[in-house]
Image (cartoon, rainbow, N blue to C red; front, side, top):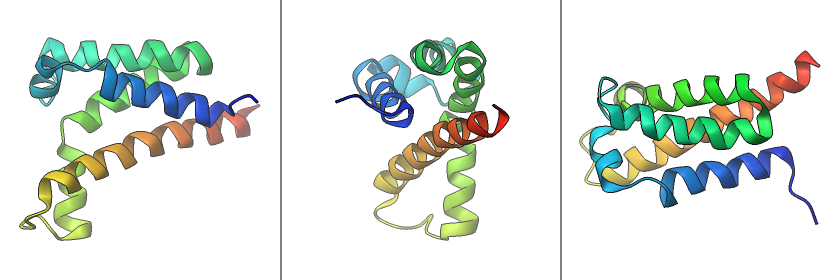
Amino acid sequence: MTLTTFEAALMLHLIADWLLQNEWMAINKLRISHPAAWIHGSIHGVLLGLILGWVAGVTLALLHILVDTRVPVRWLIKYFKKCEASPDLPILLIGCDQVLHIGCIAGWIVLAGLWK
């Protein structure tokens, strides 16, 4: 059995975000000016670039870095979900972060299919 492109990209995303991310990256990636943000994003870019091509790798790495600043996630929670005072905020932050990352990957795959 083989994986679809999306399944393979999802697995690589999970490996990069959960297995290859250390505490230094997790703490410091929130600041786009910190090397941890760029190293973490580069790991995603290299892994995703292996199956989606280098343009996708670079684009998705930059989007990953942007999402990891938590600016888009906090905006989503404040203005759309309206739950920034929730006692469940930590898990909501992680969940929204992952949905945005996976959505970027899925969006790239769909758009790349339309460009062919």
